[in-house]
Length: 312
Image (cartoon, rainbow, N blue to C red; front, top):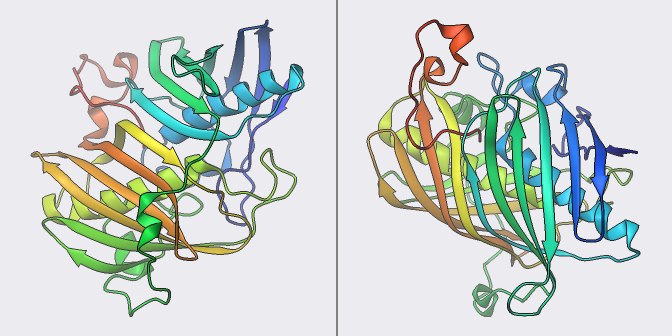
């Protein structure tokens, strides 16, 4: 059986891939996703060095978990991604095997999914997803005022900083900027394709991608390393509080918690219509030269990449 890949990027370009269910039983599911290199998102991620976006591995695990639930006649909402570690990049031509094990968490609330993603080169990601009740964010006790001030960085300015391009450039403007510590940015989302898995709600994985790109703007402005490939190394403590449905303006609040020579640790949250929809306690983003990411057969002598080494 084939699963339709979501149209994850909320822009006019249709992005499709296919996942095939290889095995499924009462507590597990395994899918294969073929990455041909012809998918539309590679045009913008990245034009000079195409890499499969790390958030799409989260999406692959999420869709596999949804398929498993559907086969059992159940429905569970994604409530959290407690952890995601990206160990190696996925490149055009790869086939991603996503193996999920489902169980009740120790708290007894909802369903916990532990997923491992791999390609023919080996292990690429470990993910934990939690399905169940979505609590309201404590931030909503202090409503955010609506309305947007004039941007301090517009789309052209963002393109001068980030390597992403359409359809994967998911930040439209920067509203506030403290180069040393924080940034507030916005993304305008058109209505999601109602025929995609998830219906009219925008995928959580793309909200996380947009938030991480906002952090990448801050990192690139601080380091000036704009000839590097931006990598999504890890995240932890992602909480989902609500869906973003239909056309929406999403605001991303990012704070830099730690800065290294070519990497940073961020935290942040997303708001829509004045309410908090997603929070992330910790994101690791790194900048690496493309030569450190190509397989040895493509680059001659092997290069040992730094510890943080997966795609954003």
